[in-house]
Image (cartoon, rainbow, N blue to C red; front, side, top):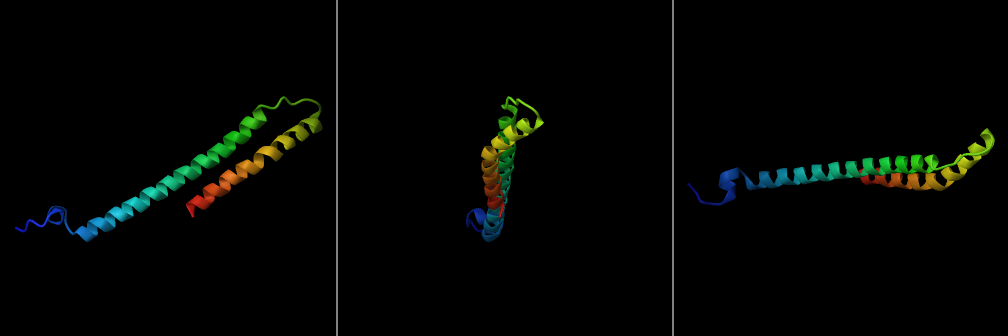
Length: 90
């Protein structure tokens, strides 16, 4: 029996290396997906929190205008988070 090292114990070293590379790529893909999910959730939470903080006053049109103002501030940031999350998946 040859005492050539780990290759004797675990099989072909090139096959082991290939499988380790595949595993690392798979883990990176899962990390990107988790980051994208978190970014999208943050965008939604940020938008909901901003709207919930509103103290709406006036008639329906005045309230709608107040919501549009907040969305004008929050929405671009939420879109940026989602766009970056999508780019991270590609």
